[in-house]
Length: 131
Ligand SMILES: [Zn+2]
Image (cartoon, rainbow, N blue to C red; front, top):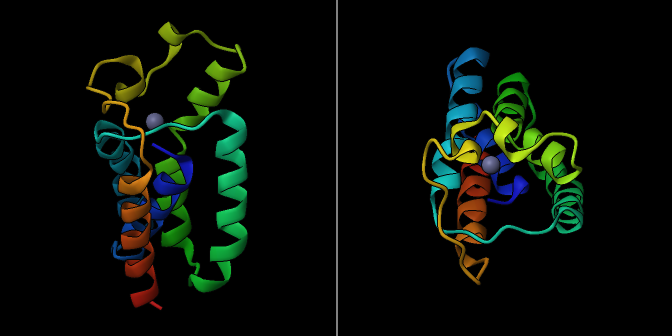
């Protein structure tokens, strides 16, 4: 799943959480659920470009607070090990997050980005409602 989708869903969950701790747990767990859905992964350059573009465009539209930021950070954090793997800093067997290590299923690859766009729009809608 694209990092920006993890980020937006984590932010949305954080916005409806009752505490920063709850936001962190919800965001971290959401990564597992999103990774299990059918999706298309981008290469590292595509991920970085999409994330930067989305953050620049979307950040002014979102009310940022500690819960939103905690949920977003916790949701995208597991992909740090993906980045380390892509840079050959760690091997695939060193990955610990369940959907990366193979402990839980990783969603099948699909050609379209439509599902991820839909999830991102839904998360953004929830975030905008909480302003
Ligand atoms: Zn992941």
